[in-house]
Length: 483
Ligand code: 6PG
Image (cartoon, rainbow, N blue to C red; front, side, top):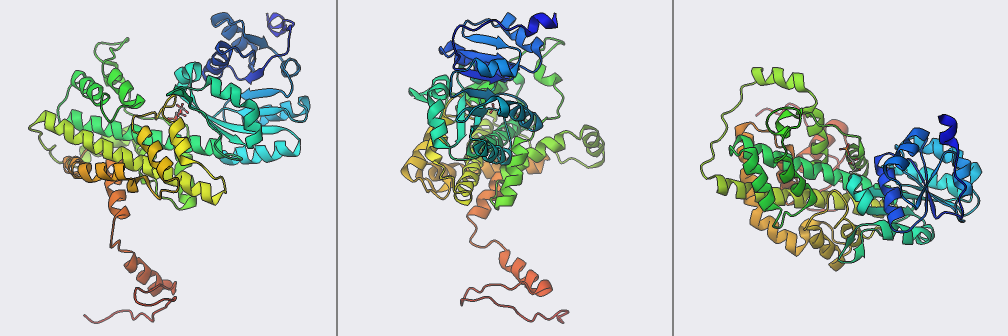
């Protein structure tokens, strides 16, 4: 059987691109390319997977290969190979196998969720070898990969231009424009994908918190929740994530009576891209507290037994009763929209800082524009974010954009009320909470940092600046004042 699998049919002509890694995302992307007329050489480390893909998804433009040397020799020069494999060591292992098989000017593209620091390192290594490397962020899950994802390619512009036609053809389209654009050098594409995922975490957390409030304070049933999210999805909150949320609440369980949502364990997984964004923000000194809160919310959700124990030991406040359910839902909607603005503002600030710090010259308007379709965070208001950065490419924060500022000023009262109600009812809303807290830190005339500086100078002579004169000062503090 194995012998049979390894036999490769002779290929009549050289193929356009090689795709290594045929699990869900790789297979879907290969079929997307094949649908668009590109001849794809497909390979998976386990030949059984390749065989299964060919049996279940036969396509005249997808040709299976069972060894890397055969795949490489079947490609048109300069050869283009896309890796769709697990991030981390497997990417290095495949690159090591490919290097001796490739010639100067050939391409390797990594379409996985790789850490941007790894992409920086790999790009430098491949440059030394005369090969071209692109770190390509791809978002959209299985459906996006199959029918049009949002694509964030990073590397040299010249390398991008050589594969531009393939990537732009397979990308999602919005207003006839491809959701794919050159992002910047080195690991810039993977960096932007990391921030995309961080925003995705915050967005999902905000929606989960809105649901918690609607269900436990508002008393909405699953059916009513579906109606609420469906209605919201027709307005300014229109987005992929709100749309699937409405669908989720309508899904019957196929293994038990009732709705499937009520049988899903209340413990969230994570593969790490949101956490990378959070770690990176601390290194860069940019506050993305809502994304960090969303990571922590998933971590806290995992402690099921401890939560059970604590819920019987720590007295819960009475949940504030809601009188007018529709007015309550509208309050939560405005809070969600405001929280969303702040989460995206945080994510875009992180990218803006990286752009300056790493000299990547990121075009935030273009980045927002390629998030408008294909990706998980696609949303109506990405049109407004695109407009904001097109108007002022160096906009210091989305919060300063006239459109978003007017929304914040109109809705912030309901963000505060929603958060307050959750706090007084004992419902955990870390994303809402951090949205309020970020907004108040962002607009604070007085932040309390003068006292921090005094304390630092008191115990460690760390010095401080003054409000009334220039310079660096140290004060001889006296301990134990008599009051
Ligand atoms: C996307 C998604 C995709 C994946 C996440 C899930 O843009 O298509 O973000 O990359 O679904 O990695 O991440 P977690 O497992 O960490 O939630």
